Image (tube, rainbow, N blue to C red; front, side, top):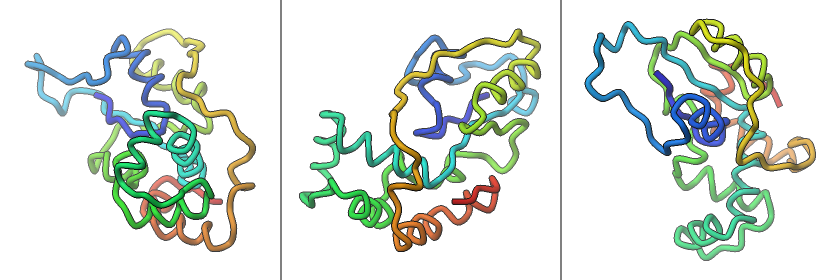
Length: 168
């Protein structure tokens, strides 16, 4: 049972497990939900914020979506951070909001191939070499931050940072 966290390889995972359907759910499960292996993947919050900024300022559909939320110019990363922490959107909401209290497996985007193959092993499946989809190429995420934006993201994602052991 997959718990989808936006901007954490969700498109790649849906392609691998659910034949690229944008939503997949259990319909009429043959056994109790507790008997399924429950898993998710998470991402470094500071990297995830940069990925959101890139997506919402370079992809035409997302630019329009952002314009529907604000008329502010968010082309500067720090302005986007200020906007994001003040305005909820599922793409950048804290990852813990998407997850149940207990999961059997939590993978990290930073070691995606290794963690995905560990998950496949738990499921009794052979390892694979997955093609990443929707990947935003960029420099190291640290290069986008000022001390103020580091702190803003730290405060906003405090529970993610604590739960998943992330550091800037």
